[in-house]
Length: 211
Image (cartoon, rainbow, N blue to C red; front, side):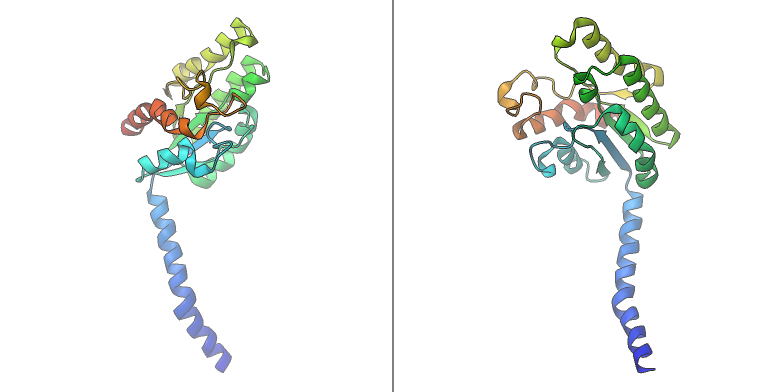
């Protein structure tokens, strides 16, 4: 009897406030419109802490939103497509920012399959009720003029056909500047992260205001 009384007081005075706090926190989080960023190493802050990456900088700019960074270094459009349904179910975002393609292009992935993956991710996102913002990627010209052109055009074609937002190239003015790139020449340095945000923020804000 004494033990039961003790447990009752413990649950009422210790666990109940904690559970109440948890419920309130979850409710507040649910009220914040979510932005899911689905990307590769460019958005996963490769070579630095996540807090230094452009997505974390975006989250600080958009404090009224819940920014979920679901980016993985080395991610491809095929891998992201497999992960997307669970991410949509788990986070129920209002917007999905897709920053993918670099690893597909560097591996010479077939353009039609890459485009199909982009289209599928856009469709899944929209079916879940989310608006989509595409962040186009570019690859070096040594893959051939035709492949490079078709790769670049894939983003524009998907955006036009699906009527979704498309932002400027996130590495514009950065990818060709060695001082803003890491030693591998592929990944942007810490110093480049604010510039990356500047490149895409106006388009993101316009999409958020319009949706």
